[in-house]
Image 1: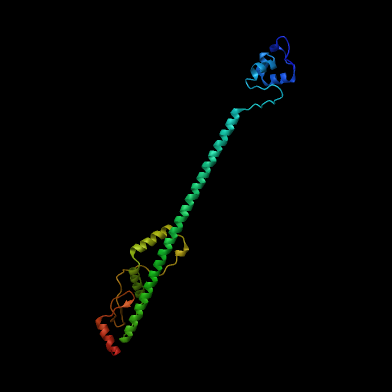
Image 2 (image 1 turned 180 degrees about the vertical axis):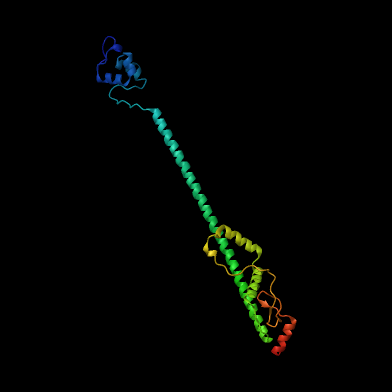
Length: 234
C-alpha cells in the first residue's frame, strides 16, 4: 500500500485508496501532512480511528437531535396534561350525574309521600262526610256540605299528615332537581290548611251533625249518640 515504504514513512505521500479515504475522513490528518497509514499506526488506531474498508460514520447534528427529543418530550407532557384534564372533566361529569340521580330519587320518594298524604286526606274527609250524612239521615235532618267547606276540611286534614318540614324538604328538592320537569307539574288540588282538624257539619237548620272529626272518623257528641239510640230503637 502507498505510504508504507520509503526513507521517511511518516512523510510519504498518500498512495492508495485507503490512504485517501483516511485523509478524507480525518481532515486534521490531511492538514498535518503526515502519511495516513503512518498516522493510523502511530496514533489513529489507539484513538479509535478507522483505516481501510470500514464505512465512514455519518456526521450527526446532536444539537438538532437533542432539540427534537426535547420537543417530543414537551409534546408528550402536553398530551399527558390534556389527558389528565379530560379525565378530571369526565370524573366531574360522572359525579354530577350520580348526584342528580340521587337527588331525583329522593325527590320521587318525597313526592310520592306527599301524594299519599293528599289522597289519604281526601279519602278520610269523604268518609267523614259520608258518616255525617248517614248520621243526619238517622236524625231526620237535611245534610249539606259545600265544595268550599269540603276542600277546607281536606286541606286541614292534609296539614295533619303533611308537616311544614316535609313541605320544606319537598320544595328544596324540587328547586334543585325538579324545576322544569313536567313529571312534577301535576299535583292534587290540596294545600296545607291549619292542621287543627274540622268540626262536624251543620244541617240546613243550623244544627250540628256530629262533633269534631279527625283521622277519618266522625266523633259524635254524647247528646247525638243518645238521639241516635232513640231513633234506632236501641
